[in-house]
Length: 162
Image (spheres, rainbow, N blue to C red):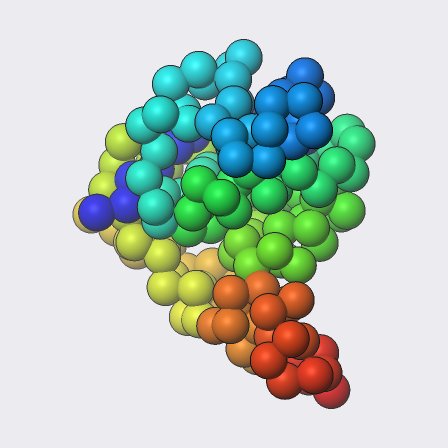
C-alpha cells in the first residue's frame, strides 16, 4: 500500500535533487537514488512505487531543472499534494505524468500513513479519512492515463484536448 511522505514549505528543486547529483554528474542510471539526499537521506532507498508526497507552500521553487521531477518519475511517485507549487516545476510534473494537486494537508497526515490516490476523481484516502481534491481537467486525465503528456502525444500525434 502506498504511503505518505511529508515535507515542509519551500522545498526547492535543489532539495528534490541536489545539482551535485544531476544525471550528467551521477549517471543517468542512478541519479534518482539521490532524491532528497540532504533533507531526507533515507527517501530514495525506502520510497515505494505509488507513494505520495505531501508538501507545504511553494513546492518546487528555485531553478526549473527538469531532472528533479524526472528523478521522482523514475522512483514512481504516485502524486504530490501541496498548497502551492512553483509554476514551472508544476508544469514539469504534469508534463512528466506526475499528478500534482493543490491542497494543504500537512496538519492532517503523518509520515508513513497508508494512502491511496484516485487521480481521475481527485480523491486521497489516508489515515482513515477521505480528502476531496480538485480533480484534474479531462484533457490532463487522458494524458496521465498514457503516462505523460509526451506519451499521449507520441501515441495520438496530438496534444490532449486538441
